[in-house]
Image: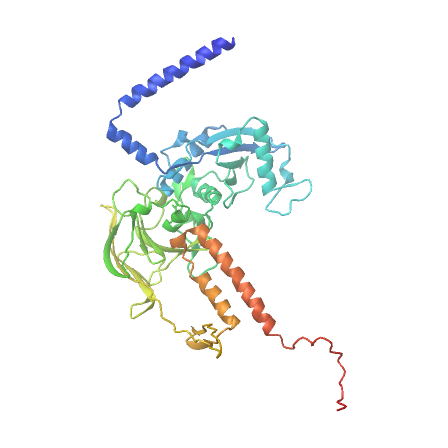
Length: 468
């Protein structure tokens, strides 16, 4: 019996190999090279989709078809999650190997789930508890979760909706089966955080980004099968995950430049040309009301910056959040180059050719030479440079050897970290180190600023009269 099985396996293997060789023989060398180029740099990132229900749920479970259409290659081409991550990553993230498992009945009642409550109450399930229980039940049923990059737990009927930032895990339910919502929660799994608006510390403030969905329902495009899709990701959020095709980002190495730049829609990788432009720390992109962005009000140009794992939408010179023909984005003063000057003017938007023409002005920040204040001791040499700084237009002198200098150096280190130059993980690490340095310097300054000095050793607190 064992021999028969081995023979059959070998026969099937040989037949498969012959079919593969025959198919490859029909592919031309240029086609093969093109295929290999396309696969290079792509990340295989399948998700295990675990369908679960509580033990006291009485209604029958829905069929698997909708879940397979939404999450797997079965529905590819219909703007499902496979399409979403392919488009939002410029082809770098491939979740086509995702698979749906279930339905599984959990050994817990619906009333046992308490949601976003920490720590987890005794005898109850919070979000982490539900995720862990679903994974345990699925593993017990034979699902090898280690074969998958991420795990999404989909509850029956109304349960919850969330994602674990950087944890490759998400939770949804029967009421949230749409790419508009799942793009954000699964995006959290890859490390994406909520999108913001310049000048605001609050999340969910960018109408043109999926990391703000829920706040702007008018930006969600209706879908016949999946309820709604879009909007897409902005260029900075894409870059933060390494998903932006940097070979198609316009840049200028010159400190001063004035250029005419043409952009294609950010997510249309099949079109030739630039998909974004970098101007200082800002990324400029072109978005059109099609596919994922079908619900945005008009074709427009958007500008973002990135800080502390959040993208920030930059308003135009006139105050609008998006830029149409004739609009301008500008920061700095062209007559005062110390802080730099960056400007983007939208010359033309042509929907027929899918092209936005921009005029980009870039005058990079100049390094101001600051003379040191040098302290010198006769009989030896001790050099410790002080300096000066401006706040609110007022000049402040920092004397040599002052602990204030250490504080200022750490603050300068913190604010000068460039995410767009060093990457998100590296910049966050550098900022944390600088913040630790700021705390140490502040503690030192605090010690020197005590209102009353410490009593000298041996001091008793009683006046002593000289008897000399």
